[in-house]
Length: 414
Ligand code: HAM
Image 1 (tube, rainbow, N blue to C red):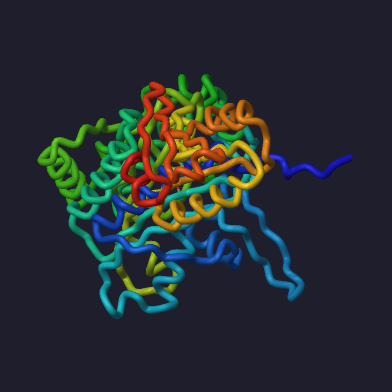
Image 2: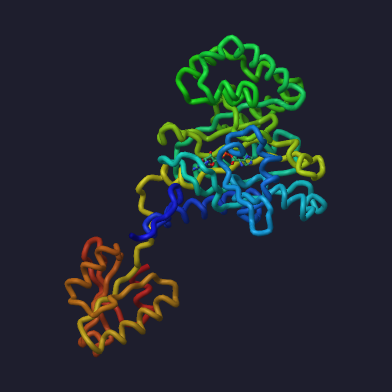
């Protein structure tokens, strides 16, 4: 029996990779326009990095990490997300000493042992961006506008921005206490996971998708009613900036995140088009994370989008590259003439193909059609002798005669 891929680990086949390039190139363009530079960090880190940042009582750390003991007896983990590793590098290389305001982006595979389904995989890819060193809500709004701008750039109306504030270490405990009080009398209505979350991570109960938990928490207190003056002012500031640029958003006070490092602003870009995997991108502010990881007290904010989910939203749009020209030949001697011509055209940046096997003219033209070539050219003995051939526009069959030299052909097909 042949060996297959590991469950939840996908191949990105050539017919899909054009769509991935479209997404990655748009992200690089939009992020670099906003002053972000790429950082590349390892896909494996010491396990401790993730338990200290994402949080011990999160689903990710409790159940989903790919953790191994390496041959040296060290516990290592395939990264389940990018922020922790990027902040580890930010601290380790003292990037803050040059400028506490760093704008970094990254892309690559992440690993979570989740139940695979449409839009949810065990190896998936994120494109993320982080800004450090800015307390002002302006940074939150820039990150959000950049994210919304990215989706516009790739031509999607979906997903939509939802924002919330989770408060800070001063006001969140007050909210947590109010939520626990509300839930106390409703414990028996909750699912088993949520009963456990009640003592470990009660805010996550608001995010449970089990219908009876949604029902039981319908009248739960809103985190926004418990924000301290500083968090309230910050959230009002973020909203003000978004409104000043006409960025559409909705406030969702029930939005909680699956990672513990967030403070104040959190957000998700959500869609109804991907079933239960509604978050296409998500993020928030993490003002305590850098110091928690042993760095200076510098705030941060960022997001990551799931590339597979963005690709699903783009659907079956065609992103593969069509050849500009297909050169067909009639027989023996012309093939080396055509090969040289193809070489000249390729070196001048035209996308040119010819047939590899010396098949019949009919089957060569079928191939030109299949590849979606924009133009075709047939070279036989007569064409080689006269030094001229007819370039045919495949769309409507119109032909024009051109000298068989690269410059003239380029002019005809551009
Ligand atoms: P997250 O919400 O865990 O946040 O993941 C961000 C995005 O990654 C999700 O919205 C989703 O599109 C995608 N994603 C997550 N898990 C999977 C999966 N199993 N399969 C496919 N796609 C998935 C973070 O990872 C934070 N580091 C985001 C952040 C950056 N916050 C601040 N800076």
